[in-house]
Image (tube, rainbow, N blue to C red; front, side):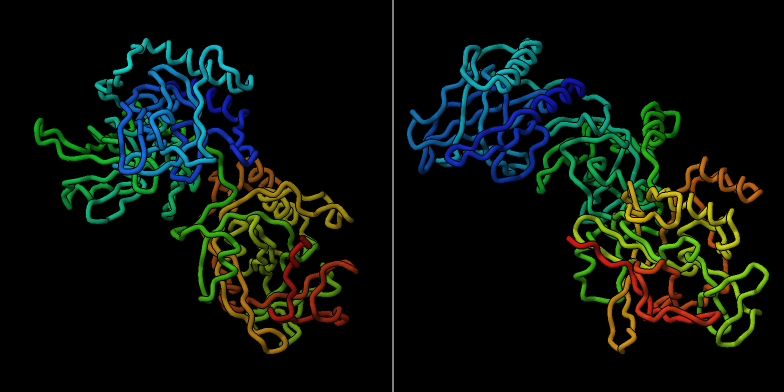
Length: 563
């Protein structure tokens, strides 16, 4: 399959729309390789083979096979039904047709079925046919491609598929053909017959989105049309045990097909005739492995990484509707608001003896903070405590980031301090958060949005029950096992500001022990944020004493924007 020609065909189809008979609605056209099990799909195609008209129990039927640049070879089998023989279209191989079909699975392959009236639609686009100009251009593109293949023009023609087996990328796999494949093992699903999930980091439109948790260090992006499931028949326990995630393997005589869910999958069986191995291991010297390394390097760096991210990704709306609390889940969302409004209040004093944080209403650089409970500074250290309002388009969710998880989220090289007087660490914090969104230079940006150009990032969230000020219990959510990926340029800039160098790695994986780890994992004490008058404020009254201690139940998370 010519990938460039197939992409050009998809781009041409994107500009064409079908009119539904009797309804008038506009529907898009689909390339044959992009079809999934569905009720109604409009397609163009070249007739590759035509069967005779035959009588079924109720109607007349004709089977035909159509192909396009995205699905050559056997193409798509279509059964066209009509009450009489005159209702069955008369077509020949090489004709360009457009039709509306229902897509279903039959014999492990996708199959098209004509629709009943009034939705039935079938048109032959000949050389002098009258049709919209954009449809005629698609028909001409298909006709020229068909002629370039030198196909015989015979009504009894059946395509031949005896082409030699080839080693190719996942992007070029087609159903009904056999291939040799070099790929990397993502995981093994241990069913009755093991299914090995493979990737070579190329995209195949016939693959769907995998719901299995993608284990690190694989990027989460491969779950979308980059993973092929291959069933290994006659596999020994030793073979299954050797298929470790991350290993590079070559599979021989692999048969591709459309699975029960309407997406591409594959299978391989033991070669009893020639006694060849089904699977062998390959190393970095293999040219296909080298090509994979280049594709991995070209993948965009995600904004965050997850530690032990083996959880299914769900929407925020689904997470908010969970009745089982506490619970843990993974989602992909972006920041729309944060608290405290002043970044200098993201770090605040914490007394390890009292297990409580507090805010200094009038901080001074020459005075050590005193705990309002024990009136001493012997157990005082600074900790990060803030909250983010996240959305993925389905719902809004306020998430608390505090204690050791906040330190891990921001990176172990960014230690909490009094940000009112440590300008270098404040600048480092701003650089770190700019990996997720763009913020104005000033801490108070007036009426302009304080979060701009926010990037969607993967995160892990834990829900728990919290006792409110009035004694009621309400669910709360906190971030965990999530870390911002810092570009090397930003890391070096922050290191220069602090006057020392840091590791060159893009991800900081180590956690720094702290006395703040004694914070309860289900009820982190959050101090009242310092906020300008008239902005988002906590439920409690403004502090007038030198120090104010607050509990988590008094903290107001960012409110959801009005819809």
